[in-house]
Image (cartoon, rainbow, N blue to C red; front, side, top):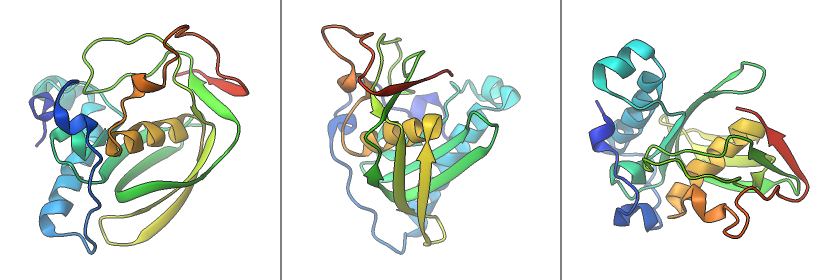
Length: 184
């Protein structure tokens, strides 16, 4: 089981590398890694498990964050209506996005970044993601709002991009043009 000790921190070289595609169908080893990513995010949201294993709560985790430079990520988050989005994907990619932007009013955080970094992170309000499940099925997901932001954050990890790279360096709280403010 993954713990906070398995998560590499900001400054680790793997976080800035472009991850490699996972060969499909996935190997047993790759399936095990993907399962461990999902297990972490689910367990980290369970108060008892998080306390027992000293897990920092997270809603998404990408393989580069555990020093595995491969395109794998897990998301376990509920949207503003309470609907659960729980996906573990190989080779996820954004195939289309809205012109309209969105940002979290609280800013973003990351399991690989220990300190809070203030500022708004502009993202797309709506995205369509394609990826492959652990059972080697291709899925296409139409996402919006918070869930779209979480997917973009994790897909950025697969491309060596950190959330704070998007923050306006001159005015961190500059509201992105044509953006929806999302409360979290």
